Image (cartoon, rainbow, N blue to C red; front, side, top):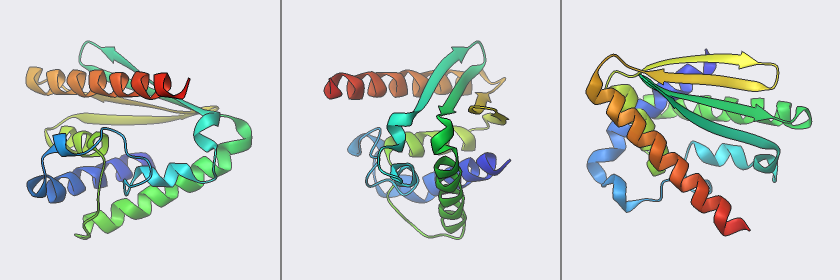
Length: 157
């Protein structure tokens, strides 16, 4: 449930940020600068101990996040920081968000339905819709996310 709150705050933030800049002006992922994503950089190296996989389905996408047990507490702390950031955004505080977080928020504002489930190894989140236009936007977001992740993995090796 906390994750849904955080994601709702991303939607509110997207509305506040988008008029000021075009989404193409920012990187899809900007872990260091993004007001939401930067929480995932603590402790240093945590991202190397988690996976974040995305899959399409007919009416949306599913995201599967896994975290190694030694980093579970750090991940929970990062989620709490993102929740706190979401609350600030909901109160009107403006901050920089990466293209991914801005897009995610806009999907939610378009009526996409979110469901999140905790698992023993992390969490699973679905984003779906019955509106064909929103489904197409979800799939486009997923495709751009996968492309950005592949590019980032390619630059590491």
